[in-house]
Image (cartoon, rainbow, N blue to C red; front, side, top):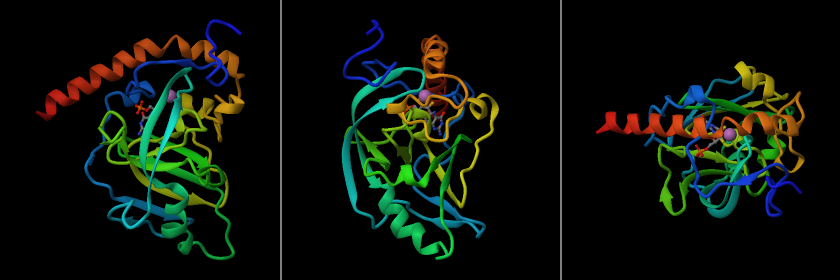
Length: 232
Ligand SMILES: Nc1nc2c(c(=O)[nH]1)N[C@H]1C(S)=C(S)[C@@H](COP(=O)(O)O)O[C@H]1N2
Ligand SMILES: [Mo]
C-alpha cells in the first residue's frame, strides 16, 4: 500500500477533512439561476417536457450517511444527506409516463449552472441514490447544490449533479460529449471499479487529476466569495 492509500477508502482515494465546493473549472463562476425553486422538468423519450413544481412533493423522505469520492482522488467521509430516493421519484412521477412497449435505459441530468451528466437508470435505482435537498441537517447551500442535487455515492462525484433543473429519459445510453469531460467521462463511473474515465487507466488519471486539486478548490472558493459579495 502506498502512502496515498487508506484502508477505509476505495482504490486511489485520499481523505479530506473539509468538503470543498468543486467541479470542472469552467463551472467555478457559474451559479444556479433559481437556487430556492425546487421545480424540475422531466422529458420522457420524445414527448414534450413536463414541469413539476416541487420535485420532492408527496414522496417519502429518507436520510442516509455516505462518503463522497471525487474522481480527482479526494474523498470526504460521512456526509448526511436527506431527500427522496431517486427510485421513488422514478416510480411515482416518471414510470406512469412511459409507454409499455418502451424500455428506459439512460438518464441525462441538466443543471441550472449548465452542467450535465448521464447515468444508467439501472444505477439510479439503487437504494442509496437520492434527490437531496438537505446536507448535515441544513437546507442545501448554493455551494453544495441548492435547490436540489443528485447523490449517487457509489459513483464518482461528477455524477452527483448539483442544482438539478431537468431530467431526461432515453431508450439508449446517452453519450455526454463536452470538452474534456466528453473524452474522460465514464458512462457508469463506479468508484469500486475505479471507472474514472473511459479511455485512460485509473492509475494514470489519478496522478494527473491529483495535481489540480488545490488550484481548483481555491478557484471555486474565490468564485463563491465573489458571488456572495454580489448577492448582498
Ligand atoms: N451542477 C453541477 N454539478 C456538479 C458539478 C458542477 O460543477 N456543477 N461538479 C461535479 C463534481 S466534479 C464534483 S466532485 C461534485 C462536487 O460537489 P460539491 O461542490 O458539493 O463538493 O459536484 C459534481 N456536480
Ligand atoms: Mo469531481
